[in-house]
Length: 393
Image: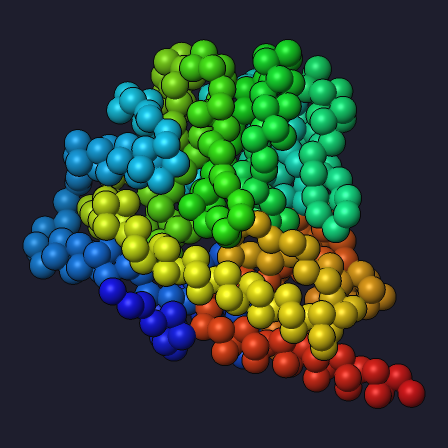
């Protein structure tokens, strides 16, 4: 099948956070929205067909997780990533962020330390702080234009920590961690009995020349690795709110199940279930086409910046549809950067500073949109910079 990722699909008036939330977020309703991490592409046809079929049954009552749901996830992880998991390891949850929170609450005590690696997806900070845990920052290090982990600092932090919230592939910097990097991380986790909760929600969105290694698949079965996965980013269905934790350790699994029960969290939504299963069973061809399209969009942004906007540098992106833009050569403060992109260029991006102070001077761009809209945004940035330059004389 062919898929039309250039197709414009109007989302205004659908209660879309990305579109209908622009005025609240940016103080203007008409920015080109390249921010919150969902895509403007139609979901795989199999997903839509499954949802329509389920909707034709007019009763939408309480729903159980069917065996076929578990089987679809087991099939996907084995066929796409070579990871064989057991059914009993799977715990479903309505979204990766709630599952991170439940893991922290279940497996650590108030006051115990949890490590994060900024600049990182901002809920990682609140999951730690708002549960009364101590936040430790093991900042990523820039070298030769890319990012890596500071393992010496990680070992120092791990000596007094209970958990690490790990992002793989990393949002927002776009790193797909190498096997050797992950093995070093595992060495540290073993040495200090560190529980690692690995957010691998972007694991399927990998560009050619890179390979995603599931952390838990490299570990011994006895090691304390918890993996968070979901079809939401892969197949553009985040609004359906269904994810899974893969927890080989039975004690950790029981503790997290108990925590979810304490919170009265039930993820069994009849629509999220059929979409989850359809995506993992029949979405592979669509995903392959999506990644080819995103790769071309990423290359277009890279070439455009190099030719017309050399003051903005693209950090090499190995995965995800989120690009990390180094805007420090523009010489603006973070407040000035936000004002420039919103009110001068008319673009809605995520401010890098929201991912920790290590993100100061950066912006995050979502390229999960028709390519002509990405080019329109780049042209707007270019025009705004030229106006700013002319006005300075």
